[in-house]
Length: 107
Length: 119
Image (cartoon, rainbow over all chains, first blue to last red; front, side, top):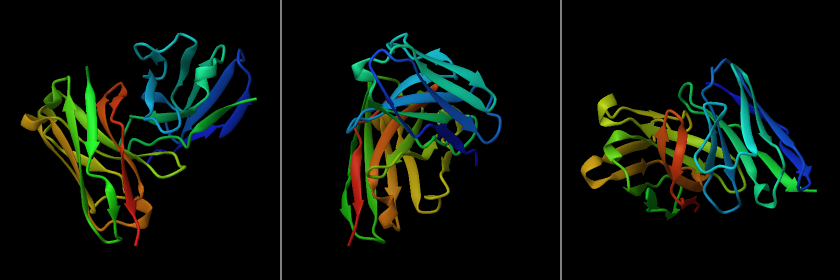
């Protein structure tokens, strides 16, 4: 199975900050990497697919990059509604494993 | 509008069984793979398994943690997805989400249904 490791597990940031979250795969997954945002009590929402493609309706302050084993989710200017937990997921092979999540909290 | 609505969750004793359903609407259900994802209380997301579409033979795959105990099935004429859960363990306690799967990710999610395994 492919292991997905996110870092950090949590971070504190202020509105307007640039935030980056990394996700590392235990083996190459090409660009088969997706990012999700989850707020408490609500189902996750797809933000980024194929490592760098923005899902329809997602603000352009979100961006993704990387290929192979190392990936980054960036938020260019953190907004109040962005405080949430973010997960990466690989869809290169089954089981389609998720990272453990990164909680973005208000500083 | 795409909608996925899960039902069937509840309280069950260890060793018991439960069947979850997911009613889909707003898209051509038969064209899509469908996945189940779960989330234990206060924990992260765990992929449970999926069923491929008709074109890919309706084959299924599962996470190791549920293989042999859980069965995913679908009824395309009824636009419905199912998760049959047998030999339930306390660690299966979670919110279970039905999701529409594309090569580009899980693009639609249901609201989730809570399964609690407890004596």
